[in-house]
Image (cartoon, rainbow, N blue to C red; front, side):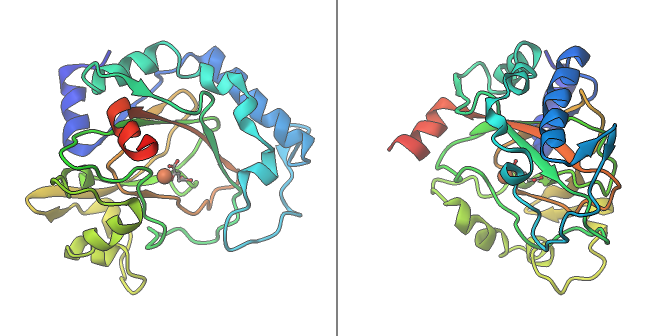
Length: 262
Ligand SMILES: O=C(O)CCC(=O)C(=O)O
Ligand SMILES: [Fe+2]
């Protein structure tokens, strides 16, 4: 369970960091499952990464191409059973959730980027903004190897869940355009902006709410829980090792039914 103070952080920022939450044995099993896939595909051998012959592609290579279909790995879904799912239920105020992919999704990016910056592209939501709906779901993220700053962890705009809460449905593909009416997001999402690192260090203000780009980084067993209204994006991996994260989405059942069943 989370404390009242942690609950408030989640409500104000839309993102909560819970270090060392997971069972280290389960984390080890999940990491080994991924390493063994990497080994089969020639990316990992004799305890080290073999990445020199991978192409430098502008868009990261697909995870399915590098690791195959990881959704058959039950050790990934096992990570969330127990404590994680009871915390998610608590954050959702006890309401029923639906998590369509039991074993979640692996986020894997090779360390092919030369420069790190806050990207202007690919900011998105995974579920539409729904009318008269508060929190539509919670997304779980963890690390299966150490992910340092600059190492490709997901970026989110903390505070962005407090915007666009009206009586209108806004499809994910239209959310970016709607946010850009505010200067903060216009600057964030346009290529010309200089000093992009400032988005991490200097919070902005939109409609009286504090916005700040937060980079997920941490160690295996550390967890981030994200309000699914937060706009987020992939970031460059300038580390020496691949970024290996696992994510799993827990939709509020009502929200899922509105978007996917109607
Ligand atoms: O690869 C990333 O860090 C972005 C992940 C993402 O958008 C998601 O898991 O919903
Ligand atoms: Fe996403």
